[in-house]
Length: 237
Image (tube, rainbow, N blue to C red; front, top):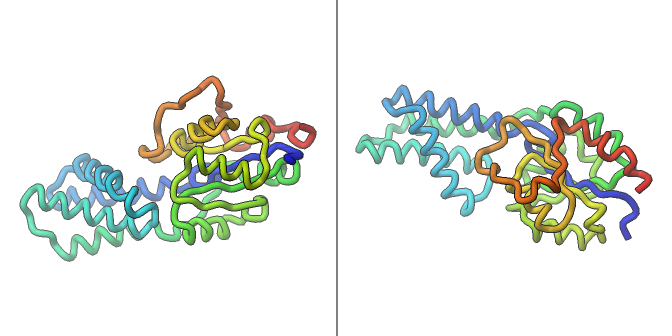
C-alpha cells in the first residue's frame, strides 16, 4: 500500500540539459550545409524529416542521430543531383557524434530539490532512450541515490505508467508525473489517471511538443525547485 506521494520524474530536459546539445549539432550541420550551397532552413527541415522517419525504427541512441545527419546530407545531395563527398559526409558524422557523452549540466535547483524531497516522497525515474546511454547519464549526474527505481523505456505512454502503478502498488490519486514534455510526460500521465506536473523547458525538442489534453488538471511550474512548495506537505499526506 502506498504510504506517501510518489513523483515519477523525467530525466532529459527536466533534471539536466539535453536538447541544447542536439540543437547545437543541427545548427552546426546547417552551417556546414550552407557552405555546400544548401539553404540553412532547408538543411534543418531535412533533419527533422529524417528523424521523424527513423526514430520509430531505430530509437534515440546518439549514434543514430549522427547517422540521421548523414542521411539528411545525402538526401540534400540527391535532391540537387549532386555527388556525396566523402569528406563532407565524415564531417557531418563528426558533428553528430558531439552529442555522445555530452557533459551533464543539472538544471537550476535540481540537486537541492531532490535532496529535500528524498525521504518525504517516493521518487522514481522514468526516461526514454537507449538504456546504456541513459544509465550512464544518470550515473554521471550524481542523482541516482535519490531514486527508489530507475526505468528506461523505448517510449513513454500511459501503459508504461500503468505498469509502474501496478509494480509499486501506487495509488493514482497520490502519484504525479513530473516532466517537460507534453507528448511523453504530461499527456500519458493524464491518460493513465495520475497527476501531472509540467515544468516547461525553453529548448524542448519539437517532436515532444503537442497540445496538453486537460490543461486544467495540470500543475505548471516555472522551475523544478517549485516542487518543494507544491509538495511541502508530502510527508504528511
